[in-house]
Amino acid sequence: MLNIVIFGAPGSGKGTQSDNIIKEYNLFHISTGDVLRDNIRRGTELGETAKAYMDKGQLIPDELMISILADVLDANREAASEGVIFDGFPRTIPQAEALEAMLQERGTCISAVVGLEVPEDELIERILLRGKLTGRSDDNPETVKNRLAVYHNQTSPLQAFYQEKGLYHAIHGTGKIEDIFADIKSAIDSVK
Ligand code: ATP
Ligand code: MG
Image 1: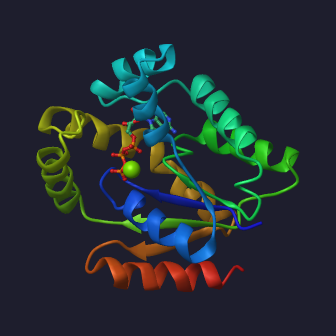
Image 2: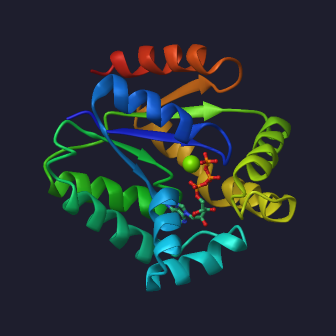
């Protein structure tokens, strides 16, 4: 199995590049943001809980997020038989530790972490543009500030966490989408 974590700040291009990766490697895409937004759309209880955090730019509590991820993994065993791309998870050290345990229980492990590195001013520009184009409700100036702060405080420590394990591959996340994808492919092919 090829299990890839796509890592980076909000607006770094995780969703865009995940679409390219699943096509090339036949992986199953798990975007925790998409899972939560789908629950909000369907008006589930989980969606209601998640919306309160997302609108403030905060993270959903680890325990809840970890159990959601385990459910998605188990519900899609067949589709995920060649591997998974994890997009938006893990976002904290406890989530990373839980992911490691979950994969180990299922007889597999993380193959590589692809880190999309983009300067903060470009992140903000991209997110605000996406907010205008798609109407995504957390893509507004107020919430973005919080999301970036949360990223720096809670998520960015994962970079060192995965570097120490020799799993982290830094990718320049600016420029043409296809050029960025070419770099991602080289990184993934080097661990295949
Ligand atoms: P990108 O712009 O690259 O798509 P993002 O960080 O802006 O990334 P999502 O990944 O879609 O957006 O996540 C949106 C929100 O969903 C987060 O701000 C957070 O509230 C919640 N969320 C998503 N994944 C997690 C997670 N693993 N743990 C906690 N909360 C999460
Ligand atoms: Mg996304």
